[in-house]
Length: 218
Image (cartoon, rainbow, N blue to C red; front, side, top):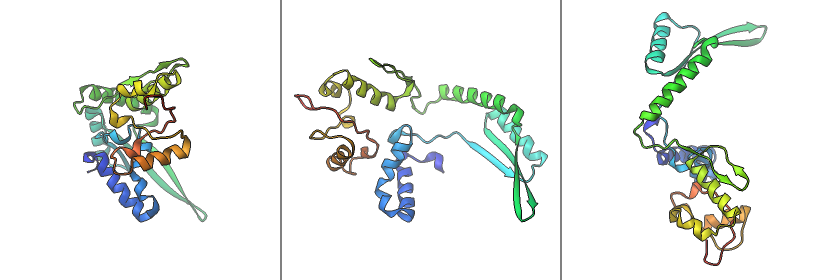
């Protein structure tokens, strides 16, 4: 059910949750999710399955099936055995991972990573996993996903003295917005919220940066 959800679906469910437990923050659902997720409002929910089976014991039929699915389809399945012990008035729980065996966990993880990379190469869902390195006067950035790379690039160009109006020519207008005044911090965020209210579908995921307005506007 979750694998078919879009970001907007996720926002709707989160708003319902906040309405119940934190009503005053219900309007912040989109912004909170966008800031928490690496790709913001362009996030695509993964369809890759990860399963953890927890039990006091596992029959041979279960372990055989888990090993077969892991080997043949590269599914991430773990079997964790819980054994309770009572010591005086305390209840202790012994937690042991039985599949994959702790000694083989690293090898299993490496094989799963390889399978995941191969699936990503064959993926046809249109997602771009390319990482970029931004080079500026301060040196090179770490490898960044597209959204963070663009933010770093804009900040680097402004620090180098490139006019905001020139940067704006290379970025879609809907992704490069400005507010009037010389503002920073909370004042900048408040001005942005007033100028681009919740009605803007992307308003919750904007990164606010103070940039000096040049002669032709920014």
